[in-house]
Amino acid sequence: MKVLVISPGVLPIPASKGGAVEKLIEAYIKYNEENHKVDFSLYTVKEEHDYNTKFKNTKYIYIDTQSFGYKVSQAVRYIINNKLPQIHIGNAFISRVKKKAKER
Image 1 (cartoon, helix red, strand yellow):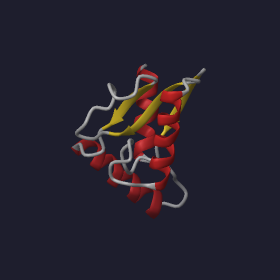
Image 2: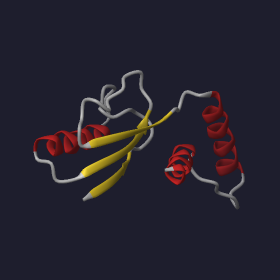
Image 3: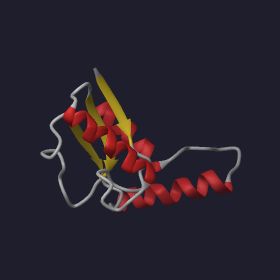
């Protein structure tokens, strides 16, 4: 069975910088390494380390939240979502996940 996991988009997984949800997802991934039941595809925040080799049953797809384009998109979305109540264009992280998923 294949499972797609989308992190909250704030902290990376594995949870090297903390985060309750990130630690929970990491615990599932580690458990799955010992008892292979599913193949995970995980969308997470890009970090300086590449964890694709650490977990055999999890494929990491990284979203670069530090890029200039991402920061601009995040700022524009914040302004539109909070200053124009009749319009909601969503979250920058989820939009990048959707874009990458369509490319695959």
